[in-house]
Length: 262
Image (tube, rainbow, N blue to C red; front, side, top):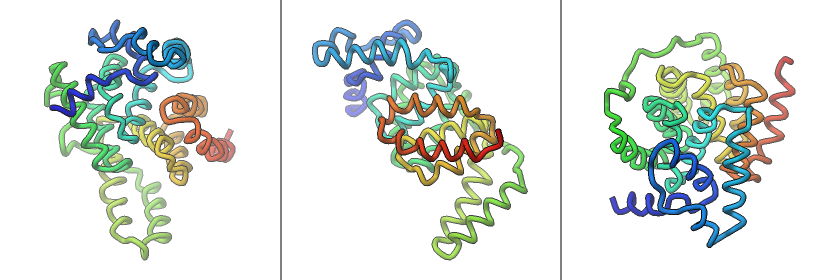
């Protein structure tokens, strides 16, 4: 509870939080400890960028819906273990139409793609938001639901490639990748495949994992993400994951875009 209290007291110290401070006050009814004026007393430039560029421009760009932007932002904060920002964005995501079950699945998914400890940090923060909003177990996914159908051909091709490349290097990783990730996690029904890909690509870019981007960006586009939406994810992540991570991802995204049928 001490950590949570410190987290809540520190909300909006960064520009991204301030960007949603005024928005969240109008949409969630949750009070903030810091106002635009408070931030301006520390960094007038930060307050200008937060309330102007992020709030009035970035979040209103047409390339992604507010719901998609919330999914990208929450995934990024979890992947980077930035718990200070997370309560505000979990609340905003709920207001933007992300369901509690989907938030639960995002956290579960990222346990595998950004690490167990990051997911546990997100659980600690999200639990308090759910309690404050009266979100109970009846709104969360089952531990073992009926899975979505498996694309047997695509999965066999993926598994064969991984086995041939890495089966003699780390057979345990290869086995868990097939059994847990692609025959279980990716088939859980409470997060649509397109949104699960949105979470994965966002977390990879935010973590600087460029080597994994080609497969997952192609998979995301196979799952319904458009080139325009993928481009806008990169723009959004420049602010939430930093320019260097995005510029590292740009050549990879360019190669994926050029390699797909027009």
